[in-house]
Amino acid sequence: MAAKKSAGWAAFPHDAKAFQFAGDALKKAWPKLHAGDCEPYPDAKHAAALLKAAGKAAPKLDADALAAALQDAWRAFHRGDFQQAFEAGEALGPVGASVAVKALGIHATYLVEDEDERLRRHELGGKLAEAAVKALPDEANSHYRHAFALGRYSQGISIAKALKLGIAGKVRASLDTALELAPKHAEAHMALALYHAEIVGKIGAMIGGLTYGAKASEADKHIREALKLTPASPIAHVEHGNLLLLLDARRNEDAAAEAYEKAGKCKPLDAMETLDAAWARAQIED
Image: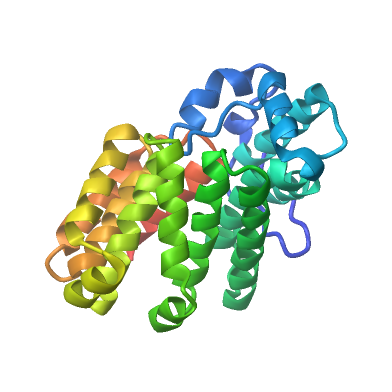
């Protein structure tokens, strides 16, 4: 069933019956669900480690209660109840930021039509992730969610403004740290590929290379690594298509369409992948 619509939170517009992951089903499906972001399964052991690392920023819960709360938040995310996932994660402070920022960002990307509201949500995601970076600097996704939120925010403003605000450097630093902590983080590889492609595509190879270290060859390297790590992930093929258009829209039009077609044919594992694949199919139909 689709999630109920709440004020300000458009409902997930597809059937979510296959994405409930009740009880032990979540743990069983976790490796595939999180192949892209390397999020550790929130069992009691991991919850205890988060509580210890976060110190004063940790919620007043024991490890079992935190594990249960995080698992429920992720169940909500995977079934497309993004508001519940966000609110549950946000209530846990920095230890819930990973699910909160992902839910907020995916919902804003696909289901928020108003551009100002979309920007506001990505900005909020960035602030939540900043707090997570301070409290949990050894968690790869503290840094990746920070880059994700800032990157989505920068895509909603002009490239000149984004560069003037220093967003590019912050995104790059967060992605580099995420990949140091989790070298097989496919979504971080995708984001770093887009970082290089956006700068080269919008300000040119020479200035982009000299000022920001952006290179088309690096974009290609990182997207290939992401595709190697998650070949069945719709978003990997979507970002491949996006990258090709950024680098040379005219020359790469057919290759980008082929990438979107591959994304649209992937079998979604959850609500997010359903939205990724639907977006890809819409690019082909336009």
